[in-house]
Image (cartoon, rainbow, N blue to C red; front, side):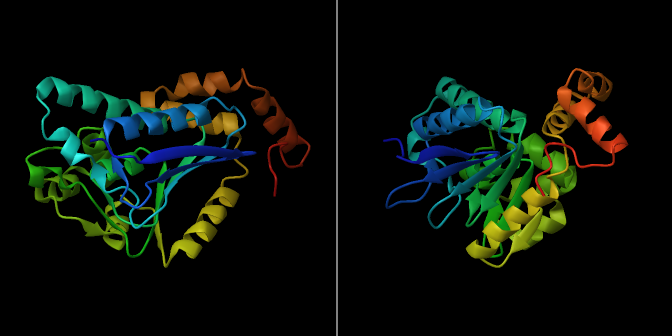
Length: 251
């Protein structure tokens, strides 16, 4: 039976929040739950006014992983389908033009950590554990977690994490480049996210989106040229010449 983990997207001006929750249970990503997360991501992607997207969760964990009970009867064809679904959702998170932050109030393991890895940044409470334990089940991460972990941590560190399957503390994740910062508790997590959002306020939203595109496809010259098709580039250069803040700066 698929988990009843839900994903809800709320948009408040320039800030979108995707909240993952499961009533009276842990957050676990079945195929249905992954599809619901994909729907929430699509809702955010469709709003051109969103500058920041926070992916967070309710409960003891961020996400405990994929739904093992659902996967147990899979054959290779079913696994291929589930892998493609999970990968497409994680790719959609990575492709969001807004700045994305995963807020880890608890453990992010397996598919849950793969979802977090698809975000631009990861902020975690000190008690949170992270990891990719799939090999301990005779499996491997199948939603893009392997290449993303390698890009962030380097091949040797990523291999150690994935080959062993051992979860690590969020503080150790900082040293590996997998976690961006650690805070004491959930209240501090909210404050830190607000600080990060404030720190990015000066960056033009369309320019940020083009930077993200260039990082993914490696075509920075084309992205630079495309800046000159945007109104924000004209506004930004004019604001610089006139020695005033650009129109998108709120602070």
